[in-house]
Length: 218
Image 1 (cartoon, rainbow, N blue to C red):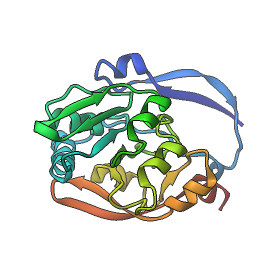
Image 2 (spheres, rainbow, N blue to C red; image 1 turned 90 degrees about the vertical axis):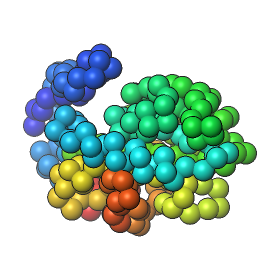
Image 3 (cartoon, rainbow, N blue to C red; image 1 turned 30 degrees about the horizontal axis):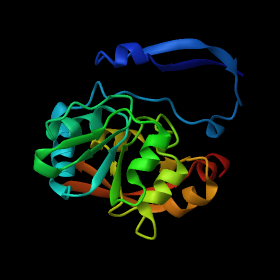
């Protein structure tokens, strides 16, 4: 069947406006279960929800640890809480020393890998609204080798990976799991199970995460 290809207008998003853009159309499987859901923006999210999440993340930060902030308005709020100017669509590396330090902004995958290798680090990622992707959509800088360098032999879904989502985003998934699609099936399987999702200040929930292949292939 023919379907429209609609994605975020990145130019308007950089201006703080959530607006869709029609890129064209193409043929897709008629089985809706084989397609990921539509993205949904954060325009309807109560600002206090995002700011509460940011406060909780900063409260959990430890000196001497590098924090990788993935793309998105929620992770950008973490930067603001630290008193830093971080990118909306890029990946930034920060530390919580002396109130907040921007180690590097809008880094490439290679730069990110160099910054976390041999250092204690934590990856902070937000959920894509309407789809549930945590890895593999819009944050390709956080590659499988970066994740491996960060989690090492530790708990992949514990202290080394922080997942952020407002209660509205989780409710919109209607019980569907969060998704990992890093490009490395082995890593995605390693991340499956249940992950703690920070939903506000002193608030979190346990939510299922699985590989994208499991979700769409049944």
